[in-house]
Length: 376
Ligand SMILES: [Zn+2]
Image 1 (cartoon, rainbow, N blue to C red):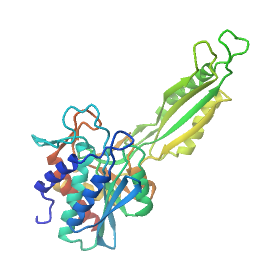
Image 2: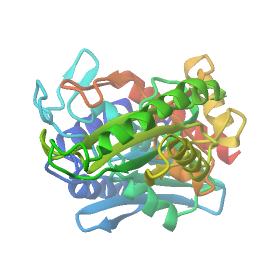
Image 3: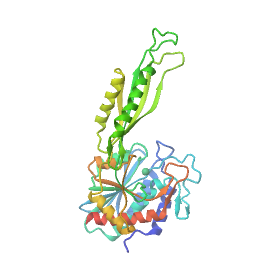
Image 4: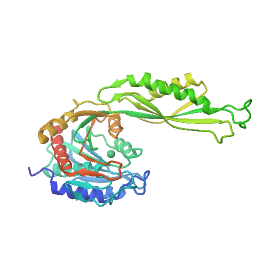
């Protein structure tokens, strides 16, 4: 097929992308500016209109598009990687051995970015009779997702395929989460002054027990299809100033994993009630929340991916859900039906990382085919 993504081009593109450092500045030294410029130039040279959109100084998304009218299908990849600390090989070597491209971000997720870019180039070259393709290559997925938040404020595609590495599975739903801080107060006093001192740590003890029981007895029995149960854990605790001083403050940080459709505010209120039943004076402060991805395999975009994957590989992809949160939830919360479908490889966030090149080539073909089916 003249308009199919070209395997040789994909290999070169993936190796070029891996060779450009794009460590998230919250996790190490670097940013996404250079790779964003490279991707925008590459897409422009293939006939798309592409722009680097600054999100914060040094932090940039790329938006590219081709075609007119609708429906508008968005293909997503994130440009940032985690740090390169402790990696065994050259993180930017982009060497190819036995069908694997090695380097930081090869798997998570420059393979997906390369597939998106080459699928977009193939579609642009073939011409799009009706419908529009948007390409979203975003910053900061590995930290606070400022790239995704900024993108959905500016752009409103009709659906999105996020190419995080899913090993050829179609992920249609995942969990959200909330982070909360619980604070108990005591009264500081010299360690000998049992008559004056009140330990805030002792005040936290029944809170920890109550939260643990709430997780075991209530949350683990609350389940949603494909993702398993809700859960909660006491993640961090600190209190006290010295062994001879009654602790005046104790701080506990709690993470609650939300079922895809659970409301963060209701979940926070529920935790507040559990905490106050155990310790009436405790303070509960939710400080960060992300809703989950609500979806199933029957949306138009999910059907397009299923049919395209079946056409290219000869079998329908497995439909799965996951515990981990992704930018798909940001698109979904903005009213954009979204699914995750990506390539294979290993070593995300580990000391050796690689992408399976054949699966990246296959992904590019499936994306191009899914777009054609989505436009109808
Ligand atoms: Zn990722």
